[in-house]
Length: 405
Image (cartoon, rainbow, N blue to C red; front, top):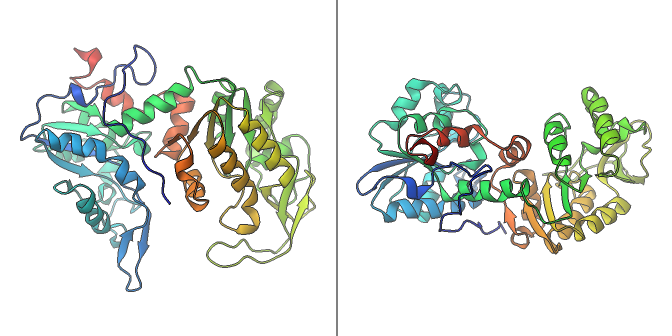
């Protein structure tokens, strides 16, 4: 089952420093009775289809996470106008990404809230076209950003409105910043980060940033093979980011005692096919960290999974982003399953960083067993890497922001 959102209805305590400092909150908005309020939400949700090809929202976690903000605004007499992107229509109208199924689900969750058409149907959204911003805010008296999962993008609906309207962070955005920003300030020790996923290129910056804060960095997923290659191991046909082998080598030299790598892997024979919607094919074998030519490592092995679980079990704080293997194929799901169970059972504060990690939790029915589930994969990593996001910076420059008074 999808996890229950952990978004409190009350505002967070705004500190004097850190990512939340200077951020205008809902309480910083002017009176809203009768005011049209534009709310940027992240309703980029997965869709399913009925037998007669009718689209429906398959997972409404992100939508439910926005309800505290939407109901707060409506309760103060505002006319709430929500806007979001869906998929990647590339700046033109594409029926596959029509908002109709999302709009139907929103009508059930928050009656009376209007949802605009897909923002990315207009090329001005991704290019941050001022004219598109003007059209968005026309007739509105206030703006709220509650789209944490999109706030690492300098798109029109994220960075444009705060320069034109009284603006605020919604409850979800504020909570995300409070929790994830807190990991960089005073985490309970030991602080363990578990990072998986496919490519090192997508995460090399955040890996370095995390290593300056964590006590242990546990590496799994496809990116682990670039680290193993940096150590001189044979990795067969496993995914290796050749352009970042030297970067991984430098991280291992600088943080030798902190980085935890696999000691064994589960691999697929040459010519084998990974199964997702259909069963996979090919022989599967268990190896150490030396993988024969042609074989593809697709999961951490049982020894590694047990070691990772032990590290997680002793954490005071654990942050997990990225599966340990191709969990959609049951043959390569054991590593992710073991780590997910360890995160769910950890005695410390557990945070899951959105994206495929949430999908893995849902797949394993562990979504409600962790302390905090983020709605943003890329955004959570960028916040941890840089300590800020374009969407947050834009809000701090709004005319009604605390520092602007």
